[in-house]
Image (cartoon, rainbow, N blue to C red; front, top):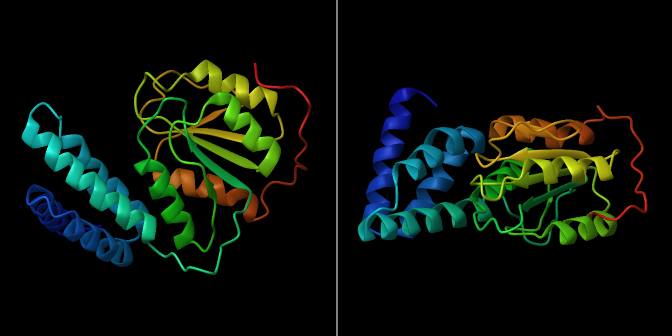
Length: 218
């Protein structure tokens, strides 16, 4: 997005959130996504505005909730066509155990729909044992785990999970993964990187056959 467009978007979305008008925020999110695409919307508008709200005062907390709700709804409905499910491409999204934030997952899901692809989004706070169960049941080829804070971004657990499923692409997304991720797990720094990673298998760039062993997650 051009700098002028970003500045205008920040002002419009901020004013709507300050008015506690989540519906207006949703409308702006949808308009901006259509005009500039989800990755630009997320990286240049949503993330910076959310980062500005520290939540130190009651007023900031209320505005943050209005902003989050508007963004959540906008991302969730963007490019949805009821009755016409998109191919998942073997992509599973989830929030790390005890991670309550899910906007990053919704942004990735919306960006994938923008590319004509779907995903299985299991939402926030998925326990590690449940994630393992989901892998056995859904048999994805790619797993993206979102962490917002270091309290939930436990790198060693993600690496262990990835090693338990050596034929599965495992990624950590979000600012919570502050510790280095050792192979085979990989950290995604931007939404564009996450979209490219999720589309890699669907575009035929991975020739591995996915197999699932009998080793449970420890």
